[in-house]
Image (tube, rainbow, N blue to C red; front, side, top):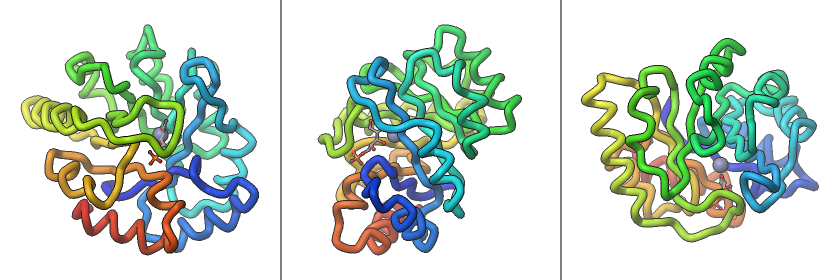
Length: 218
Ligand code: DX5
Ligand code: ZN
């Protein structure tokens, strides 16, 4: 499914139920859940109990982005906490094929994320096995950072690999997404746009989600 995936990293954690209900009543396609361990990335976000709590109220699929070392340790737990999509980082998985198979065996869709410096070509042998590629358009760890322009080139190259290989994975972009860059991102081949601060810091988040959807023609 294409569309907008607002990141609850930018929500008001003291009013999480209210913010999840806002997303339920919006045109968001997914709820993006950013898990950070303070090791793979220099920040700690939240963990399983918060993911479970969001899932209790969510009417949209949870798109869980694991920015953690050795994610294999927690795949089953995040599936049990309500993840529909589980995305692991290429840079954190020495046995990526095994990790992807494990996610699929758990009944979730498997995604693989790439840091800004990682070329899309490293995924060439696994593109047929996965449902989503997440291209980081900032260095993972924090919301509210500036979009890295080199991302457009990576999306175009990955979309070309998708066409050439006759694959059907989704291309998701995460970091610094706003109404100015949404159109160009989807024109290059992006299907899912994650947006944290741009949505939650706006005066009318529901409308902002719809604005992003229109700007990205998603
Ligand atoms: C960054 C996270 C992102 C983040 C995006 O490490 O993976 O999902 O929440 O936030 P914005 O949209 O504020 O850049
Ligand atoms: Zn994310």
